[in-house]
Image 1 (spheres, rainbow, N blue to C red):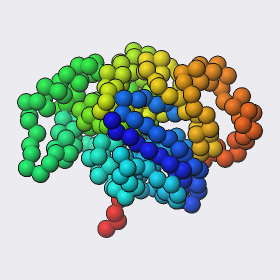
Image 2 (image 1 turned 135 degrees about the vertical axis):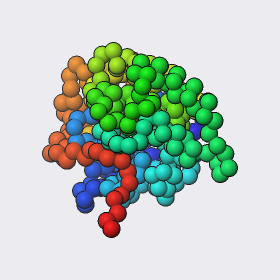
Image 3 (image 1 turned 30 degrees about the vertical axis):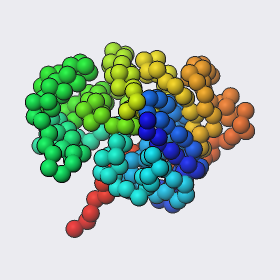
Image 4 (image 1 turned 180 degrees about the vertical axis):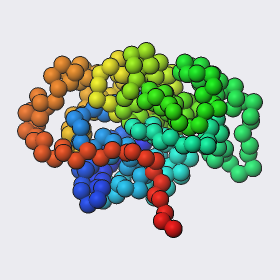
Length: 271
């Protein structure tokens, strides 16, 4: 069992503090959901865990089995078993899906080890079939010309191939129709086990109808203000968040800054 521990995490972008003391503990074998109004820090949390350069940690810690993740670069965090399905996946022309995933898998291997091409093709074909994606997908350029729903399913395809310890799924339901929601939910559920856990960030109950969620967390004003079981999902779907604001005496003026992870976590270097 692996443990991803987030303790008193504060994160800022352009000198604006967005995360204001997030505490969260995830174990492999568990699936957690984070819900909350727009601009409360959900995508910022995903970006900060993965190491996006725009998000500066000003206080707190993130550890994986006691190791400091904040000291590691984006690619090092990935090699440790952290995966992010982005809210807005990038299109990359000239690089096929198969080559992209194959390179990522090879990068995770020890020096001197080589990826079995036969095994890779067999697993890729199965993952494409599981997600009911078109058979020519491995040969298409990464996300180029994909619909919004195809891009999101492609993120799940990468997750299935890379087999991370922890997957952070940032609004993976955006752009999916009902059939695709069921397929994605079933594939996330199928990965649950002692070597896999997930943090699902979503606005809606509909995706969580297909995922066996263990814990639900509500984020408001840059903090997790309530945690519980699936009963929280039903109440939010029926009543929204005003009941919780009133109960906790919270105002929403701090929920105006919407921090969205719109690109991969590599800083562009000006030549």
